[in-house]
Structure formats: C-alpha cells, structure tokens
Length: 248
Ligand code: 13P
Image (cartoon, rainbow, N blue to C red; front, top):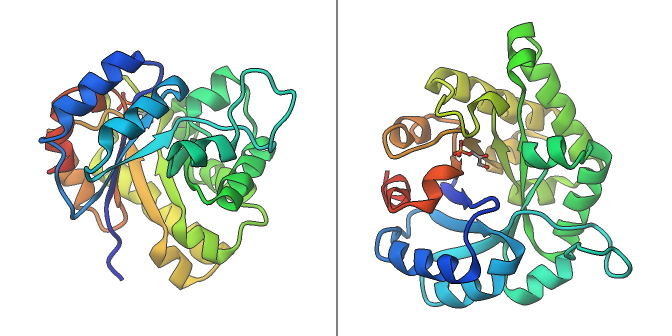
C-alpha cells in the first residue's frame, strides 16, 4: 500500500499571530502539492488566525501540544475539544523538548495519545534517542520502549491513522542531520516494532516521519527511503525554503 507522505512544520515557540499570518501568506504559493499532506503545527495562540489564513489551501493545521483532561482547573492547558473546535487536525505529542524541559513521561503521553484519538485528532507521536544513548548502542531498545509505552491500549485501527516522528535528539536544531542510512534504519525499526505489537497491515499503514535538521538540500534523499514517509521540520519550516521541502 502506498502511504501518502506527510510534511509538517513544527514552528515551536516562534511567530506572533500577525507574523504567523504573514508567513502563511508568503508560503501559500510555495507549498502547493496535493501529492503530499502539508501541516503547520503552530503555537496555541496562532491556531485561530492560522486556521483562518489557510482556508481554501492544501494546508492543514496542527497543535504542538494538548492536555488529556476534558476541561477544568488546569491553568494554562489546552484541551483536545478546544483544538478540534478551532479547526485543528493534528497534534504533536511527546516532542523531545516537551519530554526534556517539561518532564512529560510516557504515562502522560499515552493519556494524551488516547485523548487525541478520542477527540478525532491525529497524533504526531515523537520518539528519539539522545547522543549518549546512540553511542551506548541502545537507540532501538529505547525507542521501542517509548513506542510500546506511548501506544498502550491504542488499537490497530487507531495506529493505522497515527503519524510517528523519529527525531534523534542530537539532530534537532543542530544542523547535524542523521545520515539517510541512520534515519531509514530507525524508521524501519519502528515499523518492525509496530508489526510486532499489532500486525503487518498496521505497520504498513502507519506513517513514519524523520525530523532533525531537515532542509531543502537533504529532504529528497531522506523522503525517498522506503520507511520514511515525510518529515517533521523545525527551523526550515519558518522560511520560504519550506516550499522546496514540500516539493522535494
Ligand atoms: P529542526 O528541523 O530545527 O532541527 O527541528 C526538528 C524538530 O524538532 C521538529 O520537531
């Protein structure tokens, strides 16, 4: 089965609402490509204006985070229902920056994945190893543990809709991309892990992105790999260059 590539920008903590709208307008003619899914994952405060600004285009909007509770006294958090009502389709869950700086653990992330699916959002579930883990040779053990914990009680039908982003922490924002071989090896390892937990059809359907210093120069080689179904792009998603990545 041919999986549709998904190329998502993760804007992180960049772009005020007015800057966000200006960027969407600048990128609009550059990111036209119906052969791939194009997603902008934007800061919470940018969601409403960006949803408005992408109307009528091929771009869909994602959030960078959400909370798993339905509503209530959780100051500062955003619920899945709020995101859906605002027009959001995707939500990044478990980015390494959230795991590291905000101490999000697998138990919490599993709750977020469950809630996202329940609300009709597509999670972009992130996983990846530190440089130390890679050097110790435990990359795949670590990622398998993340995947298994984060997907506890998630059904095969849900996983078929899921997007997994493999982001080696040492390649994020460093300009140091994983080699194509390293990226493909882990993305294939993730697919094998899904086949083990679920079945071959589920593994064949799940989309797996690579993220970490993706740019217009390395995107085409990375996305040509059999197990890499697109990218989660940080820094380069904030520039006109993102158009070249989408049209790799
Ligand atoms: P960079 O593309 O800036 O390395 O960021 C990758 C990333 O963290 C995307 O989620």
